[in-house]
Amino acid sequence: MHELSICSSMVGIVKEHAAGREVRAVHVRIGEMRQIVPDTLVYCWSLVTEQSDLEGVELHVERIPVKIRCTGCGHEQVLAELAFVCGSCSGSEVDLIEGDEFLITSLDLAGV
Image (cartoon, rainbow, N blue to C red; front, side, top):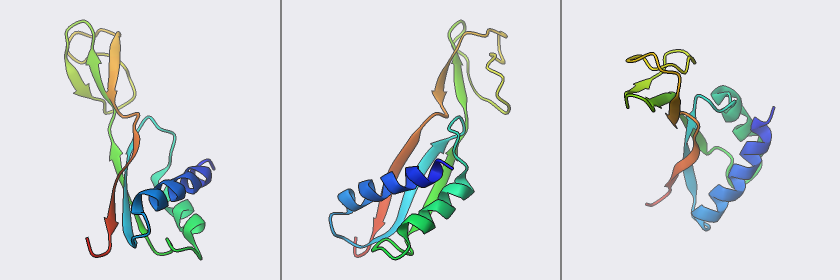
């Protein structure tokens, strides 16, 4: 369950950027290519923040679908299944342009 160590790292990042201000929510974007289970991440967040100044802070997870661009024809598409083939020309040389990210995008702070 690597989500536990990810949440532990996130706590440090959140505290640093909150700079002593009260945090109400943390927003993250996670690409579908990341092997992170959103429900497990939320559960682990509650575990690592328990009995800390971040206890009760909500973790909001936005899943980002996998999006590719064909290097041959330039067609971009969101994948419904993980088949890295262009839907326009059937080319298999594609670049991943979305779906591999893991970002803390924002913090909701009290009084801000």
